[in-house]
Picture 1 (cartoon, helix red, strand yellow):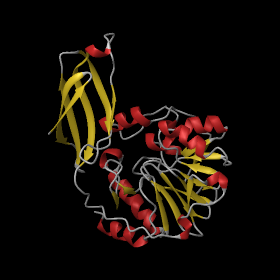
Picture 2 (cartoon, one colour):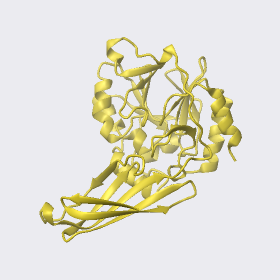
Picture 3 (spheres, rainbow, N blue to C red):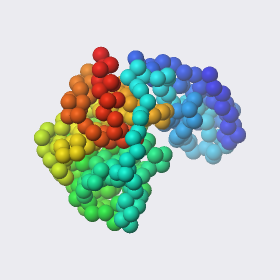
Picture 4 (cartoon, rainbow, N blue to C red):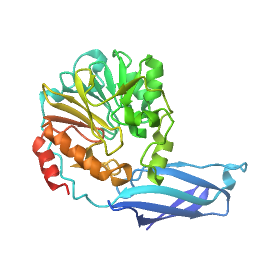
Length: 325
């Protein structure tokens, strides 16, 4: 149990961990008391024990600030312990990782001769990639100003999503509108991207993440299907994390941009390690594991994740697949 105190407004916040689901996630419910009025609802936190980033939004009443918050509730998520499907990442240094000296791409890291990873802070927490003139994924809504600056001098023809989740589609509408380019995603995620269906899975955690980082609905001008091609990359349908999840695979050098089929960093704690995405963020765990095995069959040499550093050690992927139930 943790106890936090705030001077303004005066209150005491008590955090208590409660296990939820089967994957080690914990919901930490916080209750606060003060002599002041009104209530506030916190929206999200990435971690408590490992550093605690708490984003709180108080719905204020008509009373002044000093009278706000008689009862404060905060929703926090922590992943407890280490997944049995996790192992440390062994990153191999390569000249392909060096920053290109071209002035228009100084804020990016080159992964392969045709693939760039845009820098972010903190590094590798939520990744976006550039393949030729196509932006793959669009981070969160709050990342839009940074991405637009990074891409200001870079030709763009398309934003292509690996899937429709708030941390991948968040800045898509603003980028597409500002750069006057179309948006692409798999047909099974189109309704969610266009606001005609909810993003799935639907639970307390995903609603909180969508509220904090999700972007507005936006029309999908290019509908992707298995076997399509984007900037020389093959579109491979890999459902499970969402129904319309895809990876982008380049045959000649075996580069795979895999979205959230796997992660090399825990998105909650920031701990580096190859593993599955949390169950609370995955629509169908069994389907997702079939997609992981499908990815392994392509024998990728370079794997670019939605969360975490690039992996160049295929044996780690093989070992993880061997341990899957």
